Structure formats: structure tokens, C-alpha cells
Length: 507
Image (cartoon, rainbow, N blue to C red; front, side):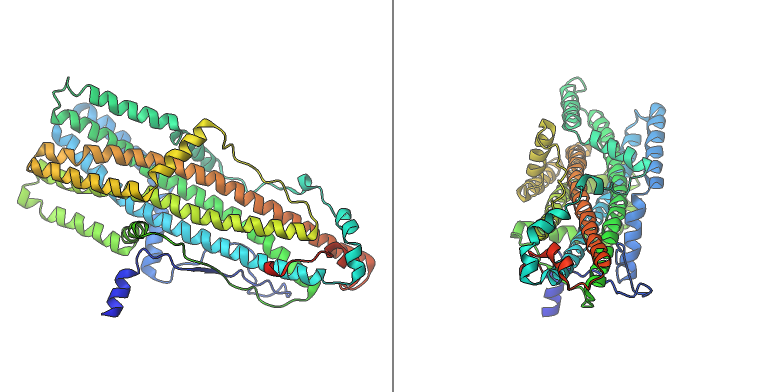
């Protein structure tokens, strides 16, 4: 019984994350030597298969296939679009597609969080080794300490010349990222709500009919499918770009470690770094609990079960419009809740990752100060613009856990309203149209949030990259000084460059 309770409590808990950078051996021919960034595959085959599906959902093929489908739907709507059956069917197809993307996007967020946290832990692991080895080099005589100030000035590099651009994105990635910044701009959100209010304004002209609701339901569903497919694609493109960038950083970092080991003869392995689990309140834990079900095999199995049951009851309902609306109503309500959860997760998980990269920056700065090197200037974001501030404020409000609670209460209200209407066509549309509008809005907010976090991530990775290049230059300087002097590494020629030492807490 206790084991069952532990299993039921496990979802939603964010465990400690451990990472250890592969130790660089002095024997360059070692087959175990790893210099780049490697994402460890999942142990279970079903998890690996599901991750492949998530990756495929963000592929160009899927994205352009959905665009083609939407275009075909728009063209066929010219002769058939006035019929209620056509709009109900296409809306349900879109609701099912969006429901599937909901689950895949949740898993995509969970995977991205875990990979980035492990990468941050590995960078911290190797940083501890760098600090320890530099400290070993800096332990010297009093003469070395006296000459420290002059030596530090003599090895000051030209930081601008050392800066090297990160691996460039491919042309498609640059294009899709530019479109993302357009779609995520606050102006687009304003235009979205202007369109909604115009639709409400002409409601009286259409006598608030079911057809009037179906038009908006179809339009918002089409927009939602596009945004889902676009978001999955842009995230996959950016994830691939981040992996290439991390690979470049890890290559520099491992090269730096190897050269420091060659100077010191050190063979101690890199130590593991454990990132403690974030502390969350009960509401946030409940949100994470729900997300774990949606984005894991259990959530996917539930999705497939619901679709199978819906298909099975089709003959009993004679495949009429009520049957078609049934799945749309369910998917619409669940999708609305998932949209609130997705935005909350995006902000929360992204903040945890940012905190770890901030810690790397702090430790890097302390290391640079101790060896007397100028710290490469950190690129800054244009966070003073009105658009940025509006996006940031809007994102913070939409991501709050209480906003998720408000969304859930709204869903209960819609269900109560539809029940009072005895789940008539109008009642079911009540559970389709407002959720579709809110979900579309939150999908656009997701793009905005993704843009903000991606811009921040690029700044962090570029800064880490620049600092690693500078450190590598410094170590190469030490090696050259050692060769030129013909003296052993313990002699003053090298020690004076590191006379200040590295503090114990960094090592």
C-alpha cells in the first residue's frame, strides 16, 4: 500500500538533478574521451519512442503538412463552408489535433527543462575542476605573490579579438524565429482581441445564432492549429540550435580542462554537481502533477482511450452533429486548461534554468577576478522597450498559478452553463467557442514567452562562450610561458600569473 502511495505521489515532484562533466584524460587516444555536448537517451524504449514522436511533431514535414491541410480546408470551405456539418466536422478535427499537440508540447517542455538543467550541472561540474586546477597552479612562493599585480597586467588579452560568434542558425531557423517574434509581439495580441470584439459586435446582426458561433469557432480553431504546429516547430528548431551552441561550449570547456590537466598532471575525476529540487507551493505542485500526466505515457494513453471511446459510441448516436460536437467539447475544455498549464510551466521551468545559468555567471566572474583577467562584457537585452516590458508583465500575470486556478473555475462554469442548456447545440458551442478563443490567446502568449526566454538564453550562452575562450587563451599563455622559460610548471614564471589564487569555495 505504501508503495502505491509513493507511486501516486511521484508525478509532479521535481527531483534533484545531478550532472557530472566527462573527465578529460591526459591520454588523447582514450576512447572514453568526450568533448562535446551529449543528451543521454531515456532508459525505457517507450519513452525514447515518445520523444521521437515529440521531435517529429516539430519537424518541417509536419509543419508544412498542417499548413497544406489548413489551406485545403479554406479552399474547400468556399463551396461547403455554409453548412453547419462542415464547420462542426472541421472544428472537431482541429480540436483533436490541438489536443494531441497539447500533450506533445507539455512533454517537449519537460524534456527541455531536464536537458538544460543537466547541461548547467555539467558546466558547473567542470567549472569546479577549472577552479581547483587554477588554484593548484596559483599556490606558490611569496615572490610570486609580490609579482602578481604586474603579471596580471602583462597577460591582459584583447577581449574583442578573442570573441568568436556562436554556431550560426540555418536559414530556415532564422526565418522561423523572425516570424515568431512577429507573432509574439503585443501588437498581434491587440489585433487578436480587436477581431474578437468585432465578432461580438456583429452578434446582434446574426441574431446570436449557432452559425455565428460556428464561424468564430472554426476561425479560432484554425488559428490554434497553426499556432500549435508553429510553436512545436520553432521550439524544435531552437532546441537544435541550443544543442549546437552547447556542443561548442562543451568542446571549449573540455579542451580547457585537458590543457589545465597537462599543466598540473592532475588526474582526479570531475565531481558531480547536484541541483536541488525547487521548492513550490501546493497549487504549483498540483499543476506539475497534472502536467506530468499529460506529458507522459499515461497522458498519451488517456488521450488515445478517449478518442477510441468517442469512435465506439458513434453508431449509438448515429454519427450526428451531437456526436461530432462531443469530442470537440471535451477537447476544447481540456485544451483550454492545458493552455493555462503550458504557460505556467513555460515560465516556472524557464526561471529554474535561468537561475542555474546565473549561478554559472557569478562563479565565472569570481574566477576571473582571482586570476586578474578582465571579464568579457556581457551582451544585454533591449529590455527598456515598451513592447518588452508589456510582454514581460503580461507573461508574468498569465503564468501565475492563480491564473491556472481561475481558468479551471471558468471551465467548471462553462460546464454548468452547458448543463443548464441540457447540452444542446448552443450549450455545446458554449463549451467550444470561449475555450477556443482563450486557448488561442494563450498559445500566442506562449510564443511571446518563448521569444523572451530564447533571447535571454542566447545572451547567457554567448557570455559563457566568450568567457571560456578568454580562459582558454589564458591557459595557452601559461603553456607558452612555460615552454619559453624552459622551467617546470612549479617555477615563478607561471605562478606569478596566478599569484592571487582561487578561493576554496569555488574549488
